[in-house]
Amino acid sequence: MFFTFSKAAPCNSFGLRERLAERLYELVNSGRVEELIRRYKAMYSASS
Image 1 (cartoon, rainbow, N blue to C red):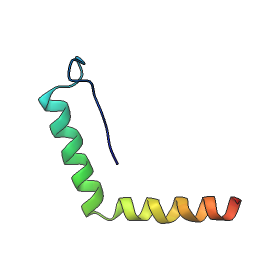
Image 2 (image 1 turned 60 degrees about the vertical axis):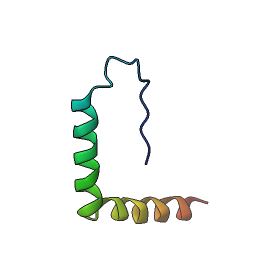
Image 3 (image 1 turned 90 degrees about the horizontal axis):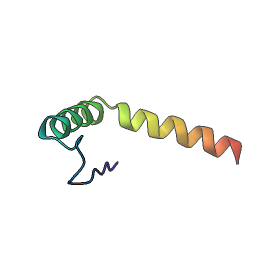
């Protein structure tokens, strides 16, 4: 998963980048990302 912000964007702050990194770390380590991948693969496989 990638997030991009322009270097000149007012929202591109150290604090925002740190919060995003922390939350993504938590999601990956809790297994939530894998769970979502499995769920959406199943949904899209069933609809094709």
